[in-house]
Structure formats: C-alpha cells, structure tokens
Length: 369
Image (cartoon, rainbow, N blue to C red; front, side):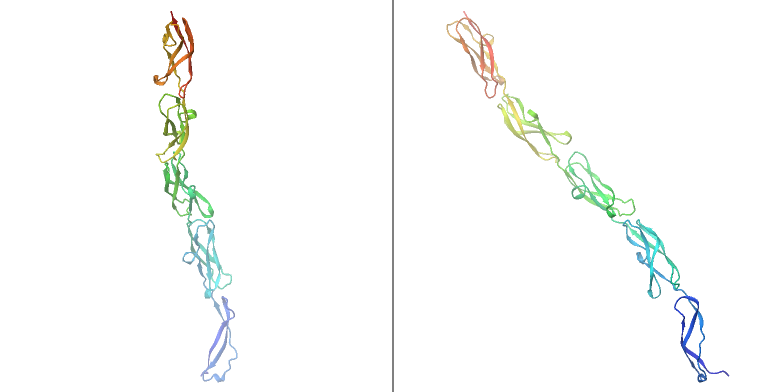
C-alpha cells in the first residue's frame, strides 16, 4: 500500500521572459501534504522545459481611421506612417511605407513591422493615405488686384485674374466669359478649373473698371480752332470739332457768344458727353474776323470822277464807297480840284474803318466846253 503524500503550491518560472522553445522552467516554494507527509523531506525539484511563443504586434497609424497619411496637398512627398504597439501597449516603434505620394489622391500602402527583439511576430498592414486637394487663390490685374482696369478705348475687355497655388506657384490665368466696352464698373465671375488634380475648382467675383476717356477739341479757325473769316455783317460763333478714341468724330460744339465786327476773340467751347464714355471737356479757342474790302464807284464818266461843263468853278473828283451787301459807307473826293476844260486823272482814297480796309482808286474827271 502506497504512502499518503502529495506535493502542492510553489511557483514555476522560466529562466527569462523572452520567447523561445525548450526553455528551462524551475519550480520553487512547493510543499508536501497527506497522512504520511511527516515521513518525507522535499529536498529537490526537477526542472522541466517549455516554450514561450512570440506575441502579435498591433499596427495603428495617423491617417484617416487611424492609419496611413491624412493631409492637404502641399507639393511635398508623404509616406504612410503607423505605430507598432506590443504587450501592455508598449510602443515598439514608428513604421513607414516604402512609397511616397505627392499629388492629391487616395492611396493604399503596406507598412511592415520587422521584429528586432525576438519576442514579436513580424507584421504587415495595408493602410490608406489621403492627400486632399488644396485651395487655389485667385488674384487679378485690376483695381485692388482683380478684374480689368483701364480707360475706354472702344475695345471689348474681359476681367482677367491670376491663379496661384501652394508656395505662390502660378497655376495660370483665368478670364470672365463676359466682356465690356463702355465705361462703367462691372462685376464678373472668373472660374478656375483644375487640370492637375491637386487643387479644388475655384470661383470668384471680381470687379472691372472702364474709365472715361478724354475727348479732343479742334476747330475750323486759325490754327484749327474758333472762327476765321472776313467781315460780312453777320454774327459768327466759334465752332470746334470733338474727336474721341481712334479719331472718331463725337460732334460739333459752338461758343455761347457771337461776334460780328472785325477783331480777334477768345471764346470757350464746351463738350458735354452724351455717350457716357468721355469726360466733359472745355477749350478756349480764338476767332478771327478780318477786315472786308470796299468798292469805290463815282458819278463821272463811266461812273467815276467828275463830269460837267466848264463853269469857272473848281471841281474835285468824287466817288461813293460801298461795303458788304451794297451798304453805302460814304462819299470821298480827291484832294485836287480842276477848273479849266480838260480830262483829269485823280486819286480818291477811303481811309478805312473798324470793319473795312483802306482803299484808293484813280478816276477820271471831265470838264467840257
């Protein structure tokens, strides 16, 4: 009949905590129990062998849903990254994919943990990376950096703008689909449609400014302005021609004052724009009314001089002076007189006045017997 004795308790421990096969296990602290336990002494415990298997690594990352890469396109290359954690959430290291991505897109990449401790299984995981489209910036060449800014020139103009991306790189020019010719302030839409795949399509409303042009005033008088003509007894105004862009004639303008008598006059002509495309303009122009020529006619033979029978009296040659429209300006006579019978040639002179030139004429006088 066997003894009533058994062993219990104690702690079995591996020689170390690292994974491995056929590792030594030692029991310590065991005790004996049973009816016959007093008859025995626990002097030695045999060792045994066992294995510690490798643990599994958990791979987590910093991208969408905790893996890969997540960020906006910035022109730089990015790799999918992840963190390897082990027993007790111990961080085993950072992992990166072997590929990088620069352009916007969704990518699937493999990150791999290769164990260097011997305690964990090598592990791989496919993670997604997200490079998001960046926002483009639209700026222009008009007032405050947008649209169109210029003076009316009769041409159609579209609002233009420059599109810049990451780091200020110029992505291109954009123009509005509408054009404007006449003076005004316009609001137009410009649209950037990305062809690179790295930027969001962008729309912006920008203002364009077409400013009033300057009109040129020229006339028909001396040096191309005012009025230029000979006294004719009529009232005259200074006139001028207004021209615009490309020499187009915008109309005629006249002064508000009139002049009849001979003289040089300075008058203001004013252009008031009706088109909306030109600034109002004024100019002082000169007008010239020149002296007219008189006609000298007389009462002698052939209408001049003196014609009569000898009467013992002294006679002077006389003539009539007529002006514009046959108006009689007065009588003139020669400075010499004749009494005896004969045919005489004498000069009669008109000294002129404010509106007429001086004039002289040789006329014959006849004293017959």
